[in-house]
Image 1 (cartoon, rainbow, N blue to C red):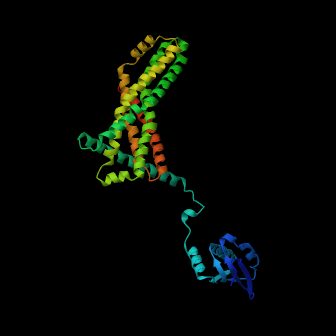
Image 2: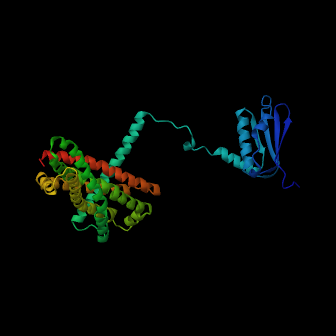
Amino acid sequence: MESEETPKKIDIIAEGEARCRIVLGGRWRIRDGLAPVGEVLARIDSGSVDGVILEGGAVAEWDSSLLSFVRKLKQQLEAREIRVDLSGLPDGAQGLLALADAVPARETASRETRRPPVLERLGIRALVRLDAARDMVDFLGEVSLAFFRLVRGRARFRGRDFAQAVHDSGPGALPIVSLISVLVGLILAYVGAIQLEMFGAEIYVADLVGLGMAREMGAMMSAVIMAGRTGAAFAAELGTMEVNEEIDALTTLGISPMEFLVLPRLLALMLMMPLLCLYANLMGIAGGAVVGVAVLDISPAAYFLQTREAVPLVHFSVGLVKSIVFGGIVALAGCLRGMQCGRSSSAVGDAATSAVVTAIVFIIVSDAMLTVMFDMIGM
C-alpha cells in the first residue's frame, strides 16, 4: 500500500524506435504543485518518436493538476506532430479531457477583435440614433394620450404624489435658485459696467441686467438648475422602480405608468417653473442692483426706476413662456430616461446622467428656436 505522502511520478519508457510510454504514478494534487511539462518534453526525442502512450494505472489520487498536465503535454506533442494515446489514463480523466476538447471556445473570449469598417460603424450609430428617436416619439405619444385622459377627467394618479412633486420642484429648489440667480445678476452687472463706464453710461447697467434676466437668464438658469436637481431625481426614482419591478407591477394591475408616475411630475414641474423663473428674475435684478449701488454709485431709486422703464412686462412674459417649455423638457427627459433604465444599480446612475444631458441639450435648442420665433413676431 502506497504511503499518504507518495509524490507524483513520471517514468518514460522507450518502446521500439518510434514509440514511448509515459507512466504516471503517485498522488497528483494541485496543492503539491504542477508537474513541469517542459522537462518531460525535453526527455522525449521528438526527432525519432512519432507516438506516445500515456498510462495512469499507478495513479493513486488525482485532481485537476493531472488534467492540466496531460492537456498541456498533449497539445505540445501534437504541435510537434506526435500522436498521443490517452487510453491508459483513468476513465474519469479521459471523460473530462474529452469534454474539455469538445466544448468550443466562445467567440467573445478571443482577444483578437475585428474593427468594423467606417461605413459599418456609421451605419450602426445611425441605427442606434434612429431607435432612440423612435423610443422618444413613442414616449411623447403615450404622454400626450395620458394628458388627454387628464383633460377628460379619466387619468388616474394620487393627489399626494402630485403635491409631493410640487414641493420638490418648487419650494425645495428656492435656496439654490436664489444663490445662482444673484450671482448671475452680479456677473452681468460687472460685465456691463466694464464697457459702460468708458462712456459714462453706468446707469444702463440696469437695462442690461433687467433685460438679460427677464428674457433669457432667469428661465435658462432655472431650467439648468432643475435639470441637474429635479430631472436627475425623476430619472433615479423611476429607474429604481424599474429595477425593483414596481413599474411592471403597476402595468400588471392595469394602472398606466404614464398616468400614475409621469403625469404628476410633468404637471408639477410645468406649474412651478414659471414661479421659479419669476423669482430668479427678481433675485438677478437684486444682484445687479448690489453692483450698481455699491460699485457704480447709482442710487437705489434711480437703479430700480431705470429697470422699470427698460423692462416692460412683455419681456417678463417671454421668459415665463420659455420657462413653461423648459419645465416640460426637464420633466420629460427625466421620466423618459427613468422609464428606459436597465435592471442594475449602475443603470440607475446612467439614467440620471443621461437625463441631465438630454434636458440641457434640448433646453438650449428650444431656447434658440423660441428666441428666433419671438423676434419674428416682434416680442
